[in-house]
Image (cartoon, rainbow, N blue to C red):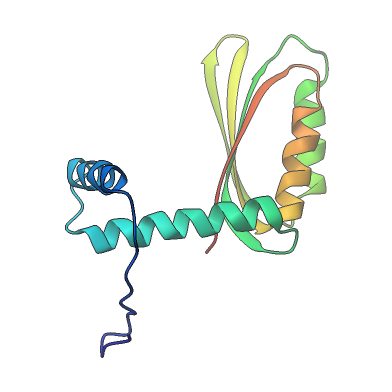
Length: 138
């Protein structure tokens, strides 16, 4: 049923323990009400679905890369990859963690498949220790 505010009311049948856990979680996170928590949970579910299933879905987010400078030409290789994917990269931030350890944050906005390809190319480089991807569906 849709009301004047443009929202749809619906009912859901859930096990009582799941509802109790959910209520405890959203209250501890200072949500104003259960509806807002359900809204956010559904948005996350949809974003994850689009990320895992879609190639052409528009996504925005960040790729984090942890790497060590012990491999020759690693920075040049990372820069080459970034230039190759410049159409989906909005910005980058380079952070020096230690003398030989760096963290790079790449802000991305593009199709899910392109973001995945960028992350995979970065992961494949020797010297890259870890890559994490966080995306949302705008």
